[in-house]
Length: 325
Picture (cartoon, rainbow, N blue to C red):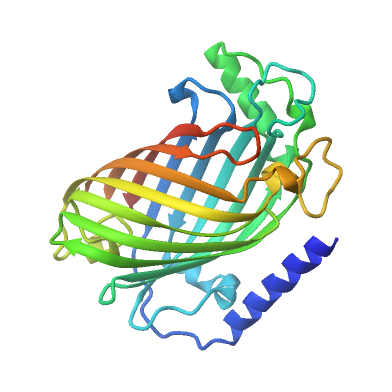
């Protein structure tokens, strides 16, 4: 119970400070964007830990009218604002999904669905970007991962997952995330190095971390847009882009509900104790991006260090499509 009280107190403190801050009169971007990603570890011939995930991201000026605007961090001075809603669905399993009993010492079955209602504030002049978002959703059987993975494996003639009845039980996902990005180096339009810092507090994930993003190739400046050339913003931008990115991140983990269970519902049949959670986790991502005008395609390979004691490092592939409407 004391953990829940702490989370609620910190969330309220952050939201109160955001509400008290003066609202910026900077412009809201007219961009209308949509993107989708699909991730799976099968491309590396594995079927465990983070095993599947999808996101759907929509950016619209109309989202600036959502009441959540009042609890997001103030915009950067002189910056352009993008408002969006991003849906997340992810599923996690232990090493062997054929076992129909709990695998003690292994990763619990877990899945979640939540929405992030966010604002991105970008100062192109200062090469800086500030993102803040409120996360709201749920973790547990209601996310539908048991039926989804079982059907996919049936279509692929793959082993049937038999342990989903022991997954993390239904609970609330409520959190607040902040991310700050700053350009550290730029070489014309062929290379950029960007520093990133991020923090999250909530019932699903509590962590703080940072990293570096390197971009190389034929591309538009990172802080000119959100990666897609929309019709209102196309002046002075390249229509065709082809570039590679490499990203390295590390985070200090405070809480991970996919390992430890939800904060409100403690009735999950199996979770890992706090002592088993790795407090420092690193992740690397390599991507290739091809874009023309308002359309883009991205393919990425992601690698992560062990997240709990006795576990393995893991890797998966992600594909992404984006379009300016």
